[in-house]
Length: 253
Image (cartoon, rainbow, N blue to C red; front, top):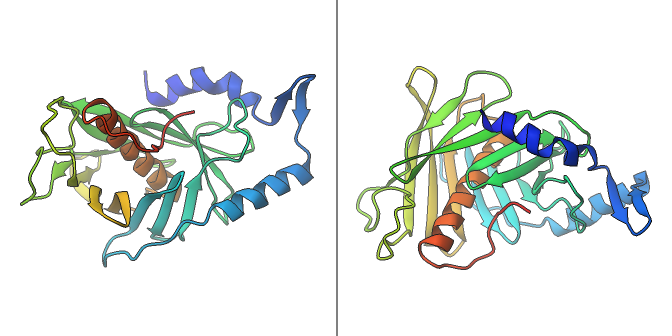
């Protein structure tokens, strides 16, 4: 069963209730004025700092505060992937990506590496998702665009001339240093590389986790953000379970 099918079954009921808050006397309707106020408050809080981007990449992002700053998106614009608001209502997404022309996108983190997207706050079906699998404890990601065939990464291999584990791995060897830069090719259904993704962990004072990529046109801003969130949750899982590192992660509610 695919991630999309499983997530539909697990979240359908909660998602249908997502347009209301629950109070002592039952559901409290959210008025248009309150929605506007929450949107303004969220917009004021989403003040991530955009970082310079190396030439040639089509997507770049980094963790900051409680979310993810998108520094560059080919065909898009800098944005902030952050909490949906001060009140986490039943069925609400883990994060919301503000997209100027096409409306907000909710991003639900189901488990490490598993992420689904929907329009938000309007009800809708899953439009795109990221599905993980592990090869000898090393993660691969399958990206499911809204249109077109799925795309799959290789395992994330450490960039040459760096010490530590050869791949971004869950292998429970405490002496392995996770810090470093890892890169994976992104391949189409025919196995031909159509781009690449890179994640750097603990290598810069500009952010603990930094993402860069060259992505095909089928991967839009919401799927790119979901992919970065998926990688972030995997890094967090490794640091918590293997290295005992405690930080404020991107995680499911």
